[in-house]
Image (tube, rainbow, N blue to C red; front, side):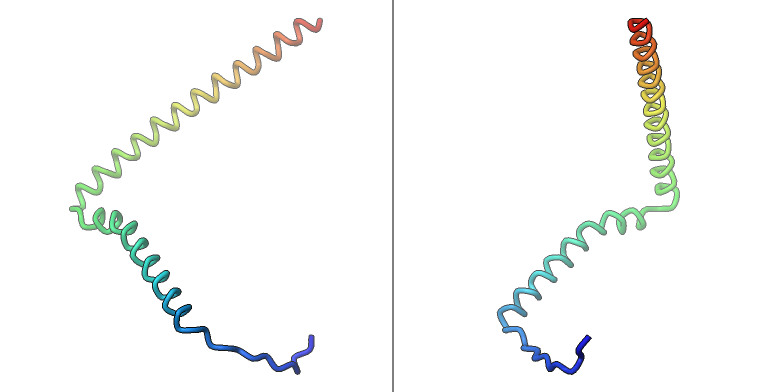
Length: 90
């Protein structure tokens, strides 16, 4: 690798700097909007946060049980389909 070459670095134009600055400001504003839900949650009293988290845990448990049930049904259907196919071939 040849490190003896001279590289010229030019300064970006003011218009490009202003554009980059505005884009960064927009990103910062968007980020602060999304994190405000987390901040609002943390400002709730401890008991309210616990209640909400317990409710979410129950919902997740119910959803997981539903998914497991669906997986069981799907697995049994696939097994029955294979058995039927084997019976037709014999």
